[in-house]
Length: 466
Image (tube, rainbow, N blue to C red; front, side):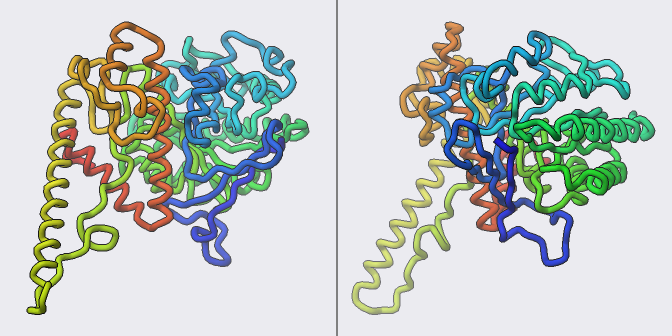
């Protein structure tokens, strides 16, 4: 092993002489060399990291993970899950560290102190220069830089995010002095961890955590300082304190842009806490390359199946759609050709109307049964006799073999197989969503892609705000 390497797609490289990041979504490739692979393995970015509990997808076994797109073997691992139960030697004594200890054998691991789902600014105690408190599934855990470095050595990840003092991103009620103190403390911890981990034989890559709360200027200053003093030692940057009280939309994007703009364009950016589809769109628009897929796990544990379309439907005319109707110019056969074209156009319009009616019917059902524009509640009795797959047209293992009624039955019986089938579908579908986002970025149509999802969510959830 030897950390990760990230390369920006040349189409998105800045002009000659520019060293800082350009705004907007971009494509790249993340490459790692796992110990159990004969050579490097590359993954396209933007990409979603699979959420784990103690290094494993909570409901999936290794053979289940094999059913997912290969990007699903890139794991987000939170150290807070281990510290309440195990010491680092328990994992470190296993040859190969965490990659061998974890049964699903991740191809790439990014380790952080933060759990995206249990993170809560109000639940933890005050941090000091010596330690920080992080939330875990069983409460809060105190971590020092020494503890963190020992766990990094034991787990042997490809990369890790440096320990951070995450300050809230609420618009009001947080003193700027406290925010500046948190940023300074985070940089001190970064320097310590760079020193403590530089001689590790596995050479894990280090992501600096960039903070600044809800203050745009402090975020920019924090990023500029870390880039100036530590930039050459870093493999990437993690945008911290997101999903920490900021307002979605322009406020959130202004904070993301302030942290990202000072960073070098040739290094990847990761953000935690923005896992829902609309949040992911905010992140990608700001130039984020890596997000986490905790939204999938959250949906599974609550009995939801992701049922939103991953990309806009094809148009019925213009390039890529049906041919436009031919004009009659009086020659033999033209009238027949025109009638055929009219029939084709009418059929297309009918199919589009049926699809819209079906989507509206499904939308009404989702809303009445506790779902929304992105997910359906499989606990609902409305699905007890529904013989359709979770998402018609989906090619995942679950949708090709099981119907909604069966998953509903498993949930009602509290059968653990329900979570397995939902997790397979949800991670498969979310990875297809990320694939569609990459296609839109490459085609230069990401603005339309994002607008489709936002407008659809606003329409189906009865909210005019996008």
